[in-house]
Image (cartoon, rainbow, N blue to C red; front, side, top):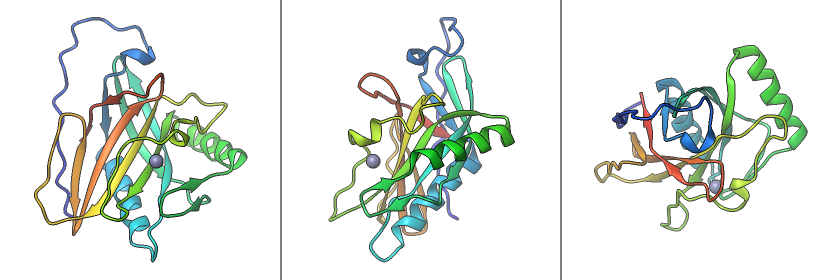
Length: 189
Ligand SMILES: [Zn+2]
């Protein structure tokens, strides 16, 4: 896989932060493995005959103002179309519970992919995307991975993490799961 991933500059931490306060979360760091899994999921969904979205959960840690995502795990039991994901709540709760116990990591939220459809790409969240996937585990963030085919150069920004994998471009965006779901900078390590 030809990965070309932005390394994010971490911000200086001037103020001391209370442990785990949602509104203080201002950075997201994806491990290389988590980043690769999200990219793989996006490519896999895009390359199905009519394109399909993909969805999974994010596990890791919250330290001061930064979310560290160590694992991005694909959920295979959903119903997927080109523009939607449908998961069953009982089954997703069990899936999260099992993985949290097994890996001893915190549930952080979910990721899902957005396909290019009719030359349109979007990284923004729909109203449905903002609905928490779990009643038992608090969602801190939601990640979208938008995928399209392009041979143009990568365009990095302060907020997105953009990757190239073969003919694909994948733009990863993170949103804090509260209020108006503000975008927060995401980088891959
Ligand atoms: Zn979406």
